[in-house]
Image (spheres, one colour):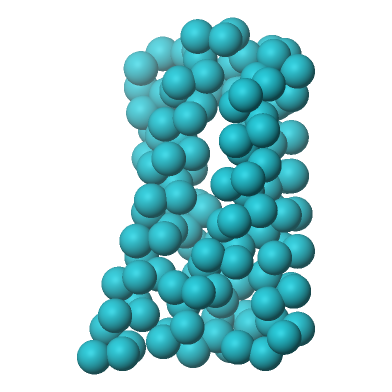
Length: 129
């Protein structure tokens, strides 16, 4: 990967995290504190949409499959750091979400990062074998 790709991926990761955090700050209660059907639909859709977005970014930047694992880490790290801060201060960053919904929000994040990082690792392993 080229140096400008590293910077671009870090910046895009930060922008995606900011947009996602703003989205859940506004709509989190509707998603997290709702009917089971709506919750589980969002719980499945959110990681899939995030994974698709990451794949589109890597293809747009022409990142070789052998480098996907590293590239996805660059996209994910700004959000992982930011989300740690948000989860520690949920009432400040997401006042519309009840404190008891913090665990559900954390689960959304955990499954999203696991799917995206796992997918990238599988692609990288296949490309390098």
